[in-house]
Length: 169
Image 1 (cartoon, helix red, strand yellow):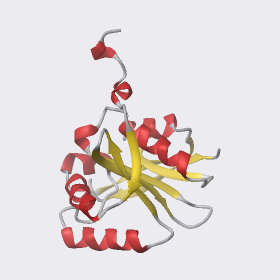
Image 2 (tube, one colour):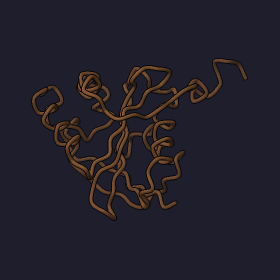
Image 3 (tube, rainbow, N blue to C red):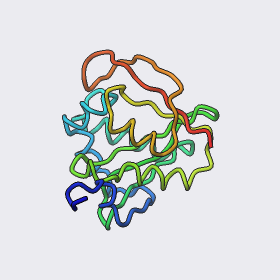
């Protein structure tokens, strides 16, 4: 196996999670405004370019004790965020990795690190059925498919298929 054919996940050398800081938010906004990334994620803000709505959303997230969000740092650089939200018994995991870092195993490493940190089980997630990358991340982290749904994907302007997954242990 040549260096080029090795799995990309091997590129991840150091990853850590930390509390979200004010300085992270401009990065998050830029990433979550990326048209290609939002198309893949599908389920996004009503208007990803609306900075005021983004700031209000993150102010609510950061002030809600029921929401846990962590900034993902890889090799010293902020590359995304991961966390959970929702009511007891229906806690949902969420994550976002900057598109410039896709294919390096960072989402899998970040989610694994978060799962090591949180005692929440079961833990649920949803992904666009055609988002193979996100589905792979969830499966590598032990989530199993528990259902399917359809939902309106704002980033695509249409209703699409979703996969529902759960982590039990």
